[in-house]
Length: 596
Image (cartoon, rainbow, N blue to C red; front, side):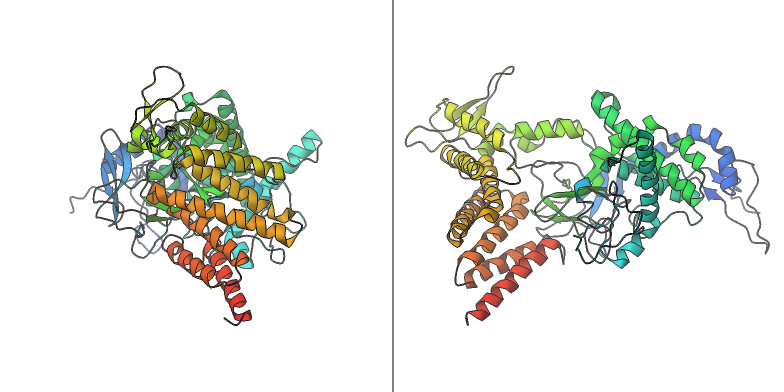
């Protein structure tokens, strides 16, 4: 007789059952703690009132044992280090341009659930793959009952088929509740469906699929790199402190939670699942606290020009901590092969063995004061990375020039007690009068975002700010770079108002000049993480050159150089790569027409 202990059901205490053919039917483990054993869902449901008291504790203990160091793949490990918490660390040196990927066969990180598209993009991009929609190719699940408040529009029949199991029922659930709200309030105004509520609903839906559906809810479209259940992963995610949230923020999170629970209950009703399970297990406050986990772990999915398209949760990437001087660049394969958006992480600077692999949570091209403010508001922590702890690094990023004649020094920040104005001291002559430069920085804060339809007056104002900052700050100043980008955007947006070809050529020439100066400012800063932004600026400058120059050969050469550098970081067939390729083809056509 074997000494191996016989496993029994935690509900009825009986050993595994036998099939009609006499074979032993294995017991099923609880998907969260992986400890409790059951014959079937009926036993688990009956035992749940007792088991739920210890389930989370058992899951936490199991996670704690694995948390010290876990090799996620040959390239990196998940480690917990004293004073730093959990993070991703390199198992061997990683060279510049190397993909930081989960396996040799996969160079992307998959989302745990379908990422949520921004509200403003729901009519412009595919709800499944985020591809840009074309007028001649828009597909829906319910043609006649399409709701403008929450449109689910697909770019192709294949995307429609791939997303049918998820998005069709989601659209019906949301539409039913929107219609009820409109009927109750006797209004035809479109209801607001928050992006956080959508992502929250999809997490709940995935949990219900895993726990209620016959196939266990596993799908190769999602969770392909996740070893645990969705519920266990959410329990293990880092969370912001609920008590530290402002009152209006708590109200918003509760509102999103209520929306998500209603959508999930409606979905269960449609699919014939246990709707009472939603009401039993998903209450407003506990679900609202999941938002405290989504916010620090979600990744903003951006296009090639760093414009936000939506948000998603990517299990391994969510363990990567923030750095204001990251050695990685995140790009997003979307609109490709009818697949959901994914994340690609590439080293833009060498990473040593044992070094932590970090990513930027925010725009790191801003001074320390604003970076820390953004991080505190969104992620509730005070950044102490080397860039934030060094007054000299931050002073060089600001780059206030000493106005004394024949002095080439810059102002270095001095310790300030209380809330007094920051004091700068020249690192060469010791001068402390930087009043004029500080006024220019204050003026810039009023012109941080260009208007969508700039007037001639707007262009003049942004040009004045840019010129002033160039005279008072160093070439590598983040203020010079930002004001240059703002002016460039104003000029490009004002092109449509040009009435004559001479005026169009003049505006385009000014835009190219600003673009080249901004590229020089980025390159002077010598920050590896800016390589993506530099490539975009080079593309804009080369595109303008193609329009301005009669001989297109130099512009084509510039565009080919941009394409070569972009391919190192952006995935194949990325939207921005296709744009560059199209411009090269346009240049080749011009070149052929001119007989060159």
